[in-house]
Image 1 (cartoon, rainbow, N blue to C red):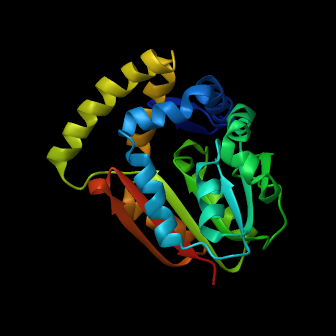
Image 2 (cartoon, rainbow, N blue to C red):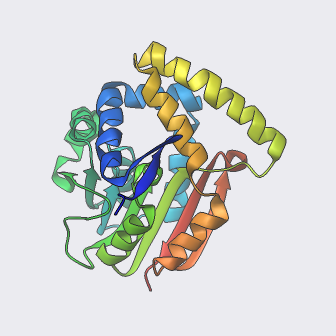
Length: 247
């Protein structure tokens, strides 16, 4: 029986290889990850993450699981908005968590934060543990995104909220072509100059193009059991927020 395959950017690879390759990418770029996010998006990723918090509206005392949470951007924002609460940052790549722990916010919020190395498709937590599950620019790197969504549903409490921030597709064909020109020609070059790693950023651009469009991903969220599922496009659809509830 032949092994199942998946995509790694535009390459087809055995399913069992993808996680290791993703770890390689993020291990390579971890120390420059935040700098590159600012450079690639001209700082707009910060606006998108703030928009995510606006829609999420964190409340005092909530428990957050931020998957693929890397350097802690979402966890820090969540705790600051909630006022008090707890955030668990889970990532496949330990080097990303190490970078997160170095940030000043991590020291100020240390009592409210856990950093866990783990797999989105097999979360090391009991059922119905968290009030909120977030994943930002991470689910497209998961080998089987549907499994990750099912795990999200499992670990959320009844009444819990899922929110996914991910790059998506621009509905306007001409604007998508312009964006593709930028993505494929500029971003890998930035990766070469800033992070000394062109290949990892070539993969990241390709992985965005391979990710399902807004409506397809919405149907995946519903298939995992989430209700009242909706999405909002950000910056013409370059990024998109998907929301769902465990009812």
